[in-house]
Each structure stands twice: as structure tokens, then as C-alpha cells.
Length: 108
Image (cartoon, rainbow, N blue to C red; front, side, top):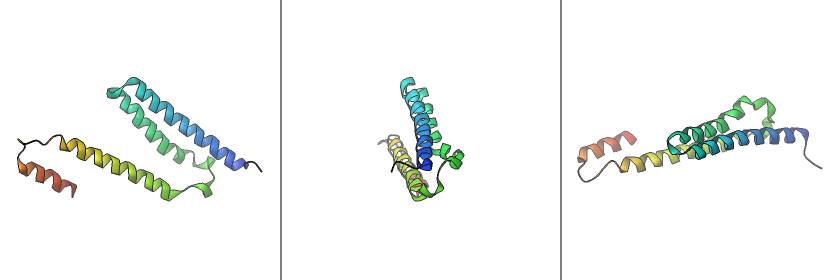
């Protein structure tokens, strides 16, 4: 039984990518928010882009492209939601109503 040579190589490359992503994210968390956010963002970008550069080491039959598209779509949805929440803090009872309409129309 056991694992095939290709599957073992896939796991090694995956663990390497995950380790790089985790180290960058942990460095970002240790540094703190103002500068550490760049480490966390770099960790995400490395985790997303490294498989593109290491594609020759992966078995192409095991790549699940719909899952990758879903992963990126979820990140975009989360970022959009965070933008709405941060934008809502800008408006208060002294903000002119046309500013609210102007901002909402840009989202449509």
C-alpha cells in the first residue's frame, strides 16, 4: 500500500509552501499591527502564488481549479464586507444624505 512517489512529492511541496506562509504570518503577528500586516499579507500572497512557480513539482491530475476559484472569491467577498463596515463608520447624523447616495451608487 503506502503512498506513491508523486503523492509523496506533492505533500512535501505543499508542506514547504504552508511552512513559508505560516512563518510569514507569524512574523507579522509578532511584530504587531502597523507593520505586521505586511507580513500577514505577504504570507497569503506567497501561499497563493508559490504553487504557480512550483507547478512542475505537482501532479497535474490533483489540481482542483474550481476550489481555487472559490477560495479567491471568498477572500474578495470578505474584503468587500470589511470595506462596507469601515465605510459605515464614516457616516454619522451630520453627513449630508447625498454623500451616502454617491457612495452607494459606486458600489452598484
